[in-house]
Image 1 (cartoon, rainbow, N blue to C red):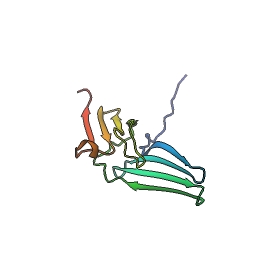
Image 2: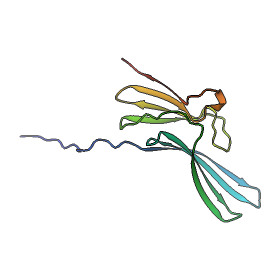
Image 3: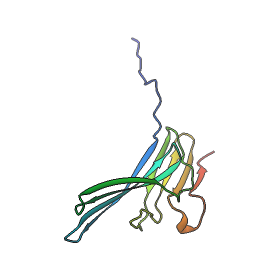
Image 4: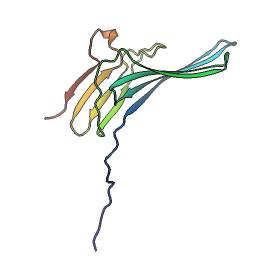
Length: 137
């Protein structure tokens, strides 16, 4: 009896965007109800970071969402279908989504390349947003 296995002909697709949701703030002073939510998006195609914010206001009956390219990220993202990305959130933050210690880890699970990147390095006075090394030989 012969056995056969079927495998997809296409490889794993490369993730082009990675979303890291941030905090949700509620401002309810009895008159105005406002909700603000923040997120950071990594864009692999252009090796950039985008800061996004959503706001809903009962006062003016509005709901808005905007994403802008960060001017404070100076790094290169690892890419490929074997790269995994994990958030490393700091504990101190402000409303503008500039997190102290807010960054992410990337690991190429095939090659062993690993890097840690910070979204905003102004607070520590360094010019590069990422540091990297290789695990193993």
